[in-house]
Amino acid sequence: MDYNRITSFGLEEAWPVRADIPSAAAADAALDGVRSLVGYLAEKTTCITMLAGSGSRWVASLAAAKAAGRESGADEKAPRGLFPVYNALGFGPDPLPIAGYALAAVRDLGHHLIVVRGWERRIQAEILEPLDYAPGSWSFATQDAPGGKPRGHGDAAFQTMALWSSSKYVVINFGGDASSPLSALDSLAVMDALAREHGDGAPGLIMPSALVRSPSYPVSVGPDGLPTAFGHAKLSGSASVSNAEYGYTNVGVRVYRAAALREAILSIRERYWSEAGGYAIPGNAPADGDPAGGEFALDNVDALMAEQGRARLLPVARAEELSPVKSLDDVPRFERDVRVVCADWALAYSNSGLGLEKK
Image (tube, rainbow, N blue to C red; front, side, top):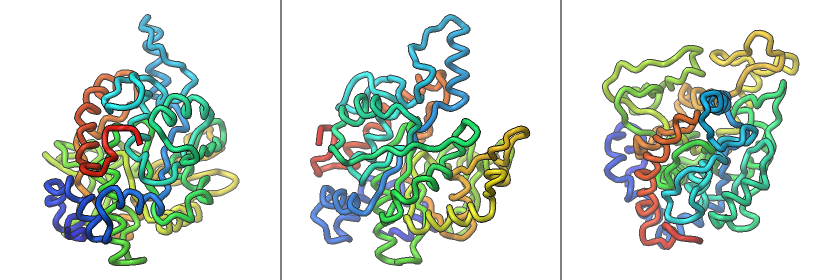
């Protein structure tokens, strides 16, 4: 497996080998199969799942449903990741909270840090324990919310830095996404392979991506196949529009070298943070009348790494992974798409004993 090639000038070659990456990575690391690879990677990795809020669109959609006389059954105060949906996993409870998919996808890949603002008992009782998370394999971290609202996933990563800095790798995903275990495992395995080959010169970010028609958030790619810019509204202050018939776009999972993530976060804080005004990052600067500052997004970290030539794409993700639940109206599409994404469990853990069953 040529890991440099499929993350640079040979991006189009990544999709055909997506199911082969775990076993190839195990062999290249002189490990006895995928089960051994998973254990080896887990010892080096912290997995952070962002589950700290409901989101303004989610709250607004619940209010709209209620005003229309449509009972959603949702607790308006709970994070949207606890909203129950169809379970296509083949294990765990049915219905399953939305965030169960994101947490199932990374269950075996490291120690787990779950960023929350309350609701720990329900997350443990309704997701972690039913999905057979090993006791002691997770911890909760509460994200502070200056001015009454969380200040972004980049800020959450900063607040929890002491809890993940001793790891070699950090996997970050989000509680509302249709996450794939294969995208997560492939990306972590490729990151480790490149780190063993290049040491401190390895990429700081491996971003699993999908090739889709007219992506809303297109990734600009240079002639060497490296990302040069991410077309996210939070990075430009305006909506992104793609004129390309097909293009690459990122999905919910990101894999970082912990040292590079720490360096990027501290660099952004140094430039754009002040005690008096909070964050003032171009594209997501404070709104008028918000003295606590703007947002620090992980997209800002990714943009910095791309600018420095330290980011790489790994186009192994399905288009169906681009189905985040942001509002109540997104739930039917999410339930449809996770049925497709769940086929990745068999591909990710084939012949490893870590597939569609309890640990």
